[in-house]
Length: 258
Image (tube, rainbow, N blue to C red; front, side, top):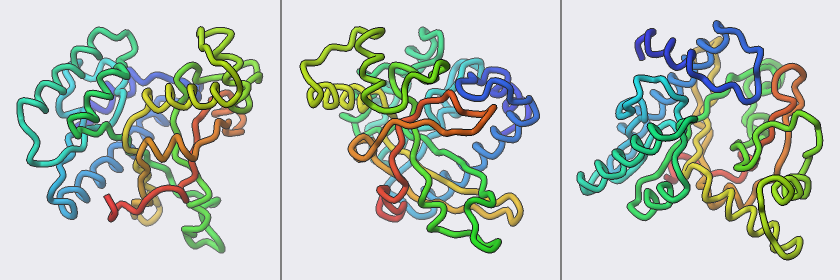
């Protein structure tokens, strides 16, 4: 991706969990993210001939002035072209109208019905915590999670939400969420979260020292919500206020199974 586009993305990045990140750090993070997406694109081209991946950056119409709500679309190569164009047009229309560049739950559902899957490709730097005696450990990596922001709240600045029960109490009090009892609440909140999610989550780990990437796997949103919990990442001055839906990487699938 040209540097001018990287800069535009950085300028319009919505900081939900790391408000003090420097511009240099944002640029580096964006470049690593785009590298991971390019690796994913190449994998699909070389290994999954019945699929096609289309990056959002290749059909967006806002000149990179809005935060991207997803990375791209995955679909079968024999898709009806008018169906794909119709979905793409609707996506761009909704993002144009949305202040924060969001896509509605209803349109996500329409995508699924047409076998067009909204994709996130998340990149993660391999660090010392992913190694044993200096060597990369798959076991260590698999202790990480697939992540997604909850529908009703992304940051908990007052430290009141630490689990699903706290989150449900917040949704009932501030977001007009209604349910009958605890079981009904859990079922309904997870259905709402599932509708709000992207459809496929891929994780790619990158070792900057050796310039090597590892496609660890993916999870389908139905399985994500089945295995997920609500948690925080306790990193001081970085993400301690962020809320996440988290499903263990161990519950994912190998990308070969796609």
